[in-house]
Length: 523
Image (tube, rainbow, N blue to C red):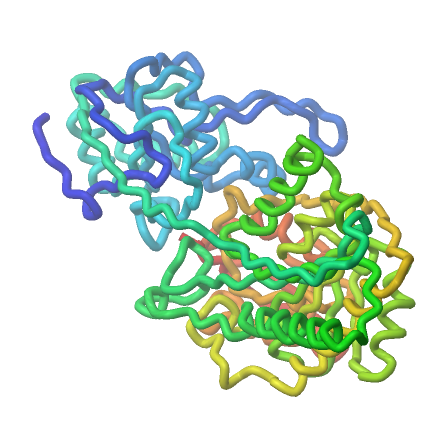
């Protein structure tokens, strides 16, 4: 057939496509494009290999595949298949099989919001080594029809959705050529570093940081806004202008003491405004790599000889009834130090031991350095244009900044340093790599030792909101599975099927309430 497809209407390149010209090449349909290795389940039972490429020759051809994973898998199967269902992983498998390009079609059973994969969902600057495009269901159906395939796109997808392997389909007589070109908008992030130097340059320093970046207007896929709001400015007053302002205040306070000779400093204080946190801790990760290479000729070296502690402030502007200090388990010294420095301020503080955090402090903990992160909790305005300055609790932020300043002062004037406690990373039973199931809950990451998943709110109009779930609720069960923590929640969430009603139990004011919820799709 001869047909020209319209970009952004019929098809769209993926952000990780290899650019250039692809000559006329045949197409083969490889189901869901999955290759799930054999393994064993929790009871030790052998799990057989699942391959969409069974008896299928794809060398030098386009491979057309469905977007996610079979829709009617059991919960156990969904958890197993999930990690292998990301477009990048499918592309890698197709490339290893010798394919020339990959064509991804959502399929009618996927119930997605957008059939074409958005460009903003992949922030990596490296390509996949092969041509990658997504097409609409309509185009996918036209390709099948032109190849004289009797089954419709929906019928093929439905036959695969049970999870049973099925041979692929060579689409005879159909060829596609393409000219792919993507202009990557490369930007340079800049960490801003300030130092108050001690007389002894060999004494491990204390670092205090806060990320200075935010989403801006629709940067990447981090926005929680919907519709036209996505393309408006995301101000980031709490995340993280609040932490950045606190950092500057602490730097000025300690510099003033030092200038007046009132700071008997024994170790240097380093002040760091991190860039690229929202894209994956890029600024702090670059900093630790650069220091490791500079001082130890090894980018992966531990840095405990350079830093005694790393403090961080990420979202300290919405103080209500407590300050959350995360990473307390990284040093046995923290509980006593926190109590001592908080004595003149009197902040209500909740501590969390977990030191594997979604903020810049983690870059240092992984290098053998004790950490602490100050945080006042998630809220409905997080990563939306509604995170504005008029909602900042300035008095609360001021008290938190004073506490962190006293903590920093205590550390840089002490000859002793906090010990480092290595912790096992909490088991992440679920994965977000292939997860698209969406409920619209906003976890309360300051929940402490609460059993279940406490919520600080829900997104308006989201499945959770429609189900009657409210901020303050504690999710104790989802789809018949008891939940002890956020990791259990992620694990079960990834196994839910979009559009299929399930039961969710929440504890509200001491009473367990059973509700019905219909999971939606993120995409």
